[in-house]
Image (cartoon, rainbow, N blue to C red; front, side, top):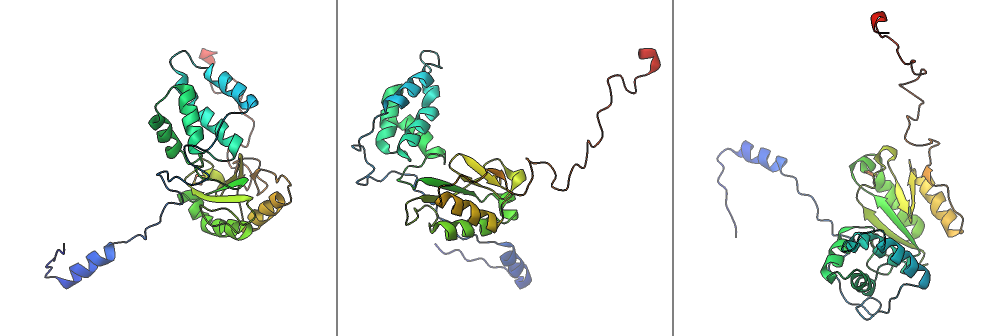
Length: 243
Ligand code: FES
């Protein structure tokens, strides 16, 4: 339907046009719906290995009877660690273990970006693109990750060793920009840091996780700016009559 606006004042119309911002549509890097593929369908074999089965039972036993669904996320994570990603059949397996409707498991597995519902590379590289990281150059970091791994967002590198994903805030904003590779955060990144970290992983080395700027954690990079003197002793500044 075409709606025609009649605006007598042309300058008002051009002001309105200037105020309208059209954001380009960015498709998600993963589908929220499941599509059967030869490697990911309800018949894909999945069983916990004995070691993970013991872990799963221990996790379920942490919860009182009737509340075993509390172990859902932990069990999905266990399944993902076993396969490297989370097949549909693993979701069904976990649903059966916890006696949950499959839909309850789908809801959780599709909500959290930590669950990878398609075959992935050996190393999952999550690049945070939320505002604090974006203001600190996450777009350049993303380009550097794509260049170094040769993987596109949502895809697997030709060598099969990396999958790259764009994610929302991972809670390390004070050390932005940052990426997560498997279980480790790499923070205060520059493009050079990204190239070095990916190169180390390619050579099967373990790069040092955490801030790459020399900071220990999230303290000011120029040194302490407050609380620079030793704390005053108990009773300091109390009136004599109250001592
Ligand atoms: S915005 Fe990137 S970690 Fe929070």
